[in-house]
Length: 79
Image (cartoon, rainbow, N blue to C red):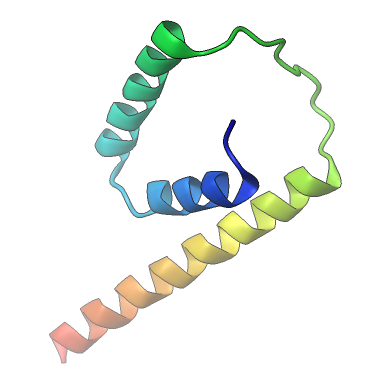
């Protein structure tokens, strides 16, 4: 089973990848699930838990920091 820290690190790493690489990661995860994953019930609820909201906020902030860093690098190269 994956820990919250591992999940957060994976999510943060995904934000650094271009869309086509994210699609490759998704395909690979799907393959691994089909081959080795345990069948568990999926929560189809659209309600957000406090943990969900916290994780979303953390991922959004990480993405914003990364985007700002890239923008700063580009701006330095142009000047």
